[in-house]
Image (cartoon, rainbow, N blue to C red; front, side, top):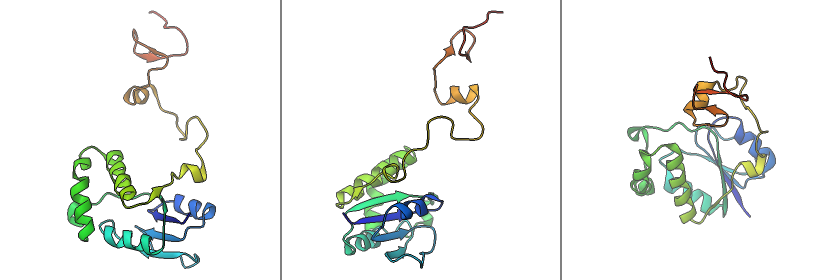
Length: 165
């Protein structure tokens, strides 16, 4: 299995590098790391053909994609020929949100012959529970659709029965 990586910003790329010995890395937002012995290239999001060629030249079969990537406007993209083809195929996903768009990209990468590896299989999942310093309040629970222990009468979350006033 020849693993390649497509990295954005943040701490996750370095955590992945510590766990996996990638054969090739595409950096989307930062410069290559001289300390790594693998093949590396810096590309913009629109350079799809160049990215696919780079991965195939390095015999990459599996991909890990992690890191923060700012979604550029269409005018900011510098699309190559394959980038235009992908843009046309991904057009229906743009208005459905980032998750839909990423699923479309995943599908196109799989069509190119790459198998995607979830980063969670490399670095694991965080522990259960609240992952932030401040737990969500009742209104945030409502906004995200959690209904556990939700009282229809007083519109409040409680581990106890409602107290009638």
